[in-house]
Length: 250
Image (cartoon, rainbow, N blue to C red):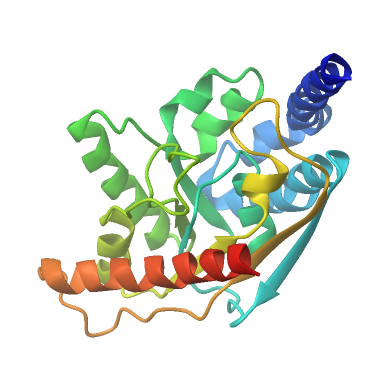
């Protein structure tokens, strides 16, 4: 029985990568055109959110459920931050926001066949081991905010230890939000670790919940004050941490 279960997990994981690639292959010409110019990015985002993310989530047997404590306004920029527990976080974050946003993501994902081709065209990539790369991210993110888009950063940085409920947050997302005076939107993924964890032989189909919390304003925060930036960081982290903790205790 254990061997059969293992084979099923392998097939299920392989199916995930097929679902990641399939919409990209089918709509390759359209995606290629939409990713060729920054002014067409909102249309690319619509395809990613409504076609690509839905294909993967529903195709894997996940049922996304998004709840909102506050709604995002159209044509307004935000800084979205969330806990990073699964590869499904990307799809669930797309489902959480109708407002077009750009991910800041690790450069290693470029290596994924087919997916990596578009990933490097539309995502702000960062090499977390390279200081120059981290500085370049800040400039590219500002350029996207200048064009009216939002930004999404997973502030735990990299892939956190699965044994941790929530790792410490880095300050980059909060500095950028303060400089542009845009609200911080904490998002908690409640089921992603259970449904599709980093551990290969684990996971299950079922409901996949995300909670978009009340926005954290940045007006009046001093960009040069490390203490005020850190306070924003801790406020966002505390909201997400307490939501995860309460879910575990129920």
